[in-house]
Image (cartoon, rainbow, N blue to C red; front, side, top):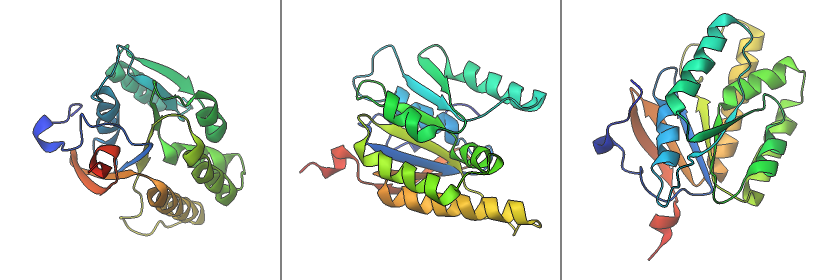
Length: 197
């Protein structure tokens, strides 16, 4: 299902806060929902925003997934592919008139692990960069900590890195949404509209 029912989305059409984190399991509707937040924002022009893609087409299945994501987004989006240097891309491209959708953080983590990067340092760098960005960012990430304990060390390390990253970003985010079965559950909403008297 690629569309989100309007009746179930209380925060759609609201002003975007500086940082939104959208979490969910596989096929939970998180990417479509995150895009809808940007597409339905007040004052939107013909251009939706910048789609910062962290995926790499390493095999035919992933290439097909990337193709479907591009097709679903439509023409209003500009796409920038950046599998590893996420912080640098955000700093270079964030601006008020063009929100950024980062899809997704878990692929970014996978890429960092494959490159042998210091994950704790990179996640700290990301969290520290967010307050200084010049425009709103919506992050998408897979919630991988709700299932069984993985049976191998690399998978357990990945799960742990993802959990720590989500906690760090959720603490600094203005809005956090958990997607389940295509429905949003707002965990945190300190959006500019709600802060007004």
